[in-house]
Amino acid sequence: MMRAIKRRVPGVDSMDGAGVRIRRSVGKSQFARIDPFLMLDCFSSDDPDDYIAGFPAHPHRGFETVTYMLDGLMKHRDHMGNEGILRPGSVQWMTAGRGVIHEEMPQQENGLMRGFQLWVNLPASEKMKPAAYQNIEPEEITEISLEQGLIRLVAGSLDIGGLHYEGPVSGISRQPIFMEVRLNSGEAIELPVAKVLSGFVYLFEGTAELGEETLAIHEAAELSEGDRIRVSAGETGARFMLIAGQAINEPIAQYGPFVMNTMDEIEQAISDYRANRLTD
Image: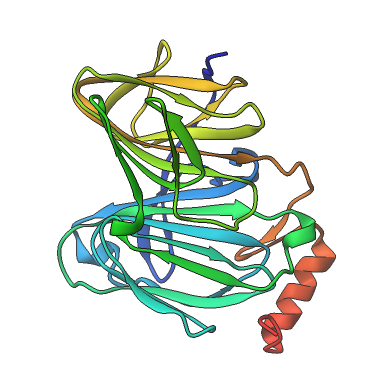
């Protein structure tokens, strides 16, 4: 069954970090989540004042963060000793679990900085597992060249054109699909999305339709039930993200960078952070 648009979550301008200008769709309120996804931010500016302050050291507990760079350079560093440069086409998939303290700071003083950060919730049984980190270089991402365009498969599997593909990110919760799709002018593509997954399409360049409905730029289009989608590009082509995962269906208690199931657990996270026990 072909999926359609169940709900539209438009992006709204906001600021995060030390003053980075972003556009937030998923997660702009507690009613705008798409289980298991807590938040999706798009950052895009060629004005250094919009990004130069970056994201200084800050904590997380209870979920995963995914940073996908389109343009620009960002340096990552965390308490576990992981450090690296996020460059165009690269991905950082970090499982905060029990606790991570990390920072992401621009490594440029001019030019375009553009990409996404996604927050993926963890079930109660995994919220306190050890922190982990995967840095995926652009050359490691599975690229699938088709007549219609190009797919960059970061996480999950994809069967298309009679072939099976796997993304490089592995060992993570919720069996997510995470991919960027680039469609040429006037082309259309059908992509499988397993019935057990919930998710959305996010158009960030060009024009496109999902089924018979027009996709709006910088809007998370939540998918209805089904097992596949059909996206067709307009005259200028299209670039979009397809993101899906297994819903958790558990209570969410959130206080800034801490996402747990109860307020008691949130208070414990705050206490642990203040006492330098968050990452023990």
